[in-house]
Image 1: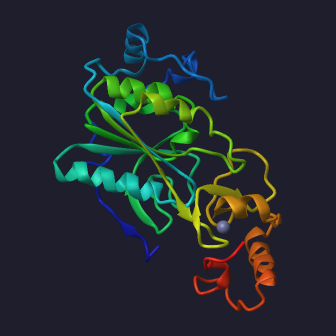
Image 2 (image 1 turned 45 degrees about the horizontal axis):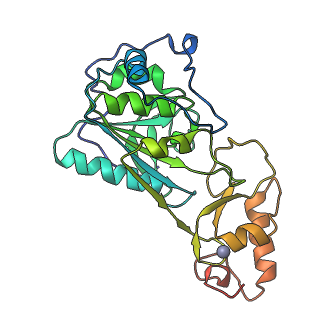
Amino acid sequence: MSDIATIEPSATPSTPKKSSPKASCSSTPSNSSKPNGEAINVSTPNSALHLSNQYGFPLNYNGQIQLIFGNMFAGKTSELLRRLRRYQYAQKETVLVKYINDDRYSKENVSTHDLVQQKAIPTDRLEKIASQLLGYHVIGIDEGQFFPDLVEFCEAAANGGKIVIVSALDGTFQRKQFGNVLSLVPMAESVVKLKAVCMVCGKDAAFSKRITDEQQTEVIGGSDKYIATCRKCYMTRNTPYSKKSKSVFQDSMLEEHEECSDYSEHCEIFSPQKH
Ligand SMILES: [Zn+2]
């Protein structure tokens, strides 16, 4: 696509220090994964040693975990790429990991909503690619909520001296915690929650509202399936469910604002308004 701006990182996944992929991931699922969000005990010396052996990061405890939470359209991936660039300026070797089923823009690139892209290693489970990450100083993980072994991997990598930066949705479209991602909070050195702008009223927006009738938690999409909303618009606006969701959403919003002639930033539905 001609309008895609591509960032070429100083260190891409094409130069791993070690590249023998593991095939054992499916046979050794972590016994501490609790996708329902219950506390995970990976903080003892024994568990640290276990995770070190499982993921292959030798223990030195010199790393850290940075969490970038937020709803959709909050700029989480942009913030992740910005932080990686800071380390690249200092000649740190960085690598980016993406969820393999998120191929909205590319199978091998992470992309922001404004189409800034960076090469990434795609996977559905972090343990599968851990051996490829040993030679890097900084590991960026995009859409962290989708990885079932996120907590264990991040702890193992940080205990092994890696700076791990995770961008993730903290909540689902139903405002429930996404998998076990919140279990990382007490294990992280830093946590931020970014907000978007409400696509209905223009206030700050902390929530992702699905505008299709799909009910499963993992439905990957962009503005065709989700909008960012503030609390009031999340709770009070009827979601215009439809297969052609976006246009119906637009139509319904426009019907309520007849003075609007266009679904654009100039339209009143994007302006701060009285509720
Ligand atoms: Zn709103």
